[in-house]
Image (cartoon, rainbow, N blue to C red):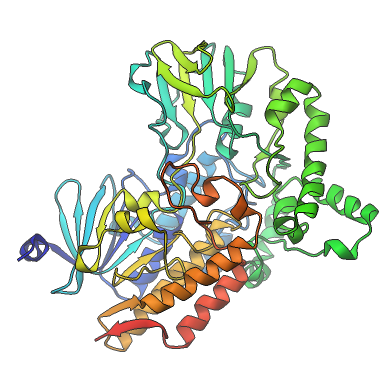
Length: 542
């Protein structure tokens, strides 16, 4: 008899376990509890918020407009909160998450400061045995992971990190409370969206700032006006419009692609690019010309437009060489929004160090050592080194399905899911923000997470109403979804670029575009068709 069977007699029995209490976890808990399920959410953090609990580094803020990064299932909940600006900072976002949890009375069903260590499927009882790191055992029919697409930080990056005599932080595990940076020699490793937010925020506060640049990034300027009372009223009056339209746009944002490249003259294309660039949002990336993702000539022209904008601000040829991309196209990496970020490099206390051809080889007690033997002396090191995206949050939990198969081992060979919501071989396991669904890349996260949690809730309701105990995708359905996902992704230039979108930032990770690229509206339609067919292609066992 295996250990999972022996422990069920002392396990806490639930209908469903939810891992995570961020945007997805809170809404999933609300829905399943409303259905009458005995459900509990568990989170490693000491409070709700997920991404917005952990990412409290200097400068952390939205780059989706606040009024669309919202739950749309309740007009009262939507209108009961007023944002102060277009792209609010982390403290305000965290307060909003508390508002949601308190308004829906969710905390009583959340266990904080609890890390889930393992989840094993018991084939005898057809239930999940979930164990916490503290030794608590939970026996549940359904396991729903709401762990986040970008929540497993790449923090152990360099030899010798423990030898550093100063302080070292990963942005996604920034400590609570104030960190004194004034007058210090600070190094930031990485200039993705997070690194840029940190750099532009601390440059005028630190004594010296050294930025270690491996992969240059295309950047777009953020326009972040404060909201007046009339602004707040105006966006709240759009609730019905946003609820109707956001789930069906290509990216779950309020804007969508309106133009066809071939239909416009070169002069008109330039006018459109200039006009959209002035918007001060992600619109140039997510709603200018879709051809930039497929056609190398269009990609190059739009990329050169953005390079030109960056060159005009950087001016210095050496800075341009270090900070402006040349070897990949605009939009094939996550596009950061910034506020006077490029101008930071003109400050006398800021230095950009290219580590593309002169990599960091180790951390020494005094600071960062590069391959040329130079030691960059530092008091504080900030690792903005990204995440094991999509898979990392789940492979760091010991998840075992039928026949003892391990999700970590399975995904170590080939990253596969069905609709990004279930995996063959793992009955009654549901996922949000997982690979092969639109998530983090090309998607407003609240739009996509609401859709995925609603699909999961509808599925659980359906099988309970039908007297079904277990649902699992068949191998044939999973093959079909993976094939469709790959055909869609491989038609894009994203698939030809090295980035976390393809898992290439993690040594040994199987290469696959991690997010569905066929569009948020299309994905919703395909998921809806699966449900409306009575879950054709899924194995339903009474």
